[in-house]
Image 1 (cartoon, rainbow, N blue to C red):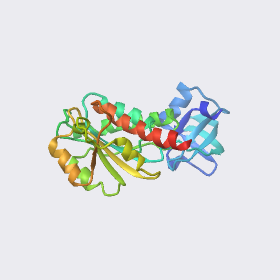
Image 2 (image 1 turned 180 degrees about the vertical axis):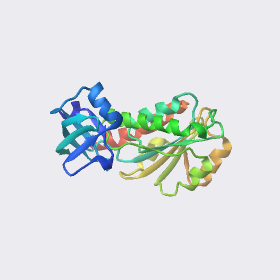
Image 3 (image 1 turned 180 degrees about the horizontal axis):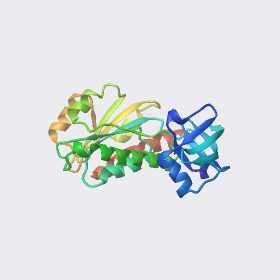
Image 4 (image 1 turned 135 degrees about the vertical axis):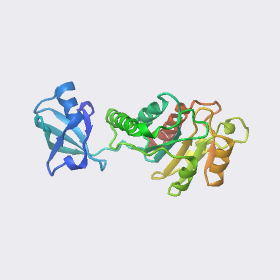
Length: 256
């Protein structure tokens, strides 16, 4: 059964016409953790978003060699391309957003150094952090049977984010002040106006939310402030609320 097969994302350079080679950490996982042998099958994902059932032919110090048995027709990606621009939260909350956000279908993540971010980004530790972040989204993509791994962009500021936001169909930001008013912009209404294939940028503030200055900047540059329900959500919950809501609208309601 396809769903029971272990899944691995394989770099484009490791694909041949009829063969695939898996090396490094994934080869170790196949050999030492899963203890798979010649004749066993796995699913290999190509960076282009296509996948194939492959059979192990041999394994050794150079990696695991496989032959392509069958190309799959899968559609596990969210119909809307959602980028989550997350104000840097404290502790390991951003890792939670990456993991669960990947499971819920995010296309990309952009960490923001916001005014109220308690955490201050350390460039000296950036390489190590991004290596861990990349591992988290890769493993979450494999676990949730996605066909693409979300992109993790460099840490940015509100100003730079605004400069690079022109290619999105919709630009939103969660603003807790919206949840406190009777005249609010409903997130549900905005979702209903989206179409499959849209590129959507959703900005989530850190603990304490966006400052009034940041909110004004975003509004002045075409971002719509939205309410995510009547309750104030934690920063790590807000992005998941957004993705789950879009998923429900496009992958459940509209597929009936």
